[in-house]
Image (cartoon, rainbow, N blue to C red; front, side, top):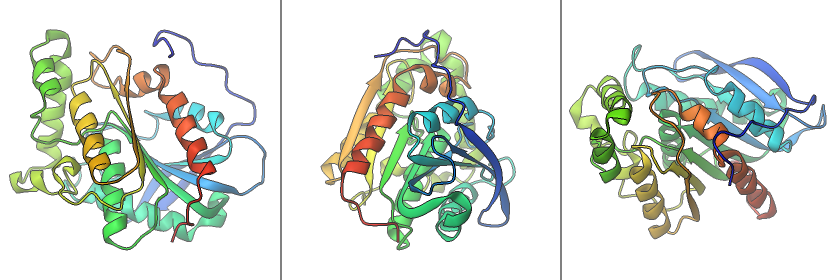
Length: 288
């Protein structure tokens, strides 16, 4: 298990990052494609990633270092990071509709992405992990595109902020800012209180979690979001979804925007690489 204070390994000189424009629900969105390893080959697996920022902030730059290492650790995967409509522009469901539209765009633009179309994953950190979980529900409900897996890193899944870890952190002065930021984020993203129980806003509240793609869910010991991540994992398992839940070692999260840094320096990268390798070994039908 990595020490959060350890330095990240040096990136290979084969890492490539390309700026793209993808299609969201209502217009173009900025994106980046990360690849490593042999140049010019088509990859069987595409991972679509959504950034953190509590639905009200964040951009592609926030997770850039994390995604560079993610792509470099798994050169058999193309990683597509996409922006989405922030709640400061339009609240729910604009972001989740963008997320699903990006998957549909990727399916139609395989050549541009250097992807064979065989395996499609979704991933995200914090609010982006909410979108990844939700887009798995949407893809199931809307008949595609078919997903091979979902990677949820310290996900925001409970707008009610009712878990024990959230209440405990609210009493910890050094983490109070993090808990307060979560509450403020949800107020911006879900101004209509009735939306807070919608499964596309709060996957944890969904009663329909069967037939979802295999999941890797990562929490951290000292994160207010810890319990909701682990509860969601337990619900997926109870619904027959093959799910791996890992609690990472504590890392400083007193900075509201520290989740990307935490994911880099905890064992998240190794867990994701192992999850991806396991998906490659399994026989999975191609994306629809």
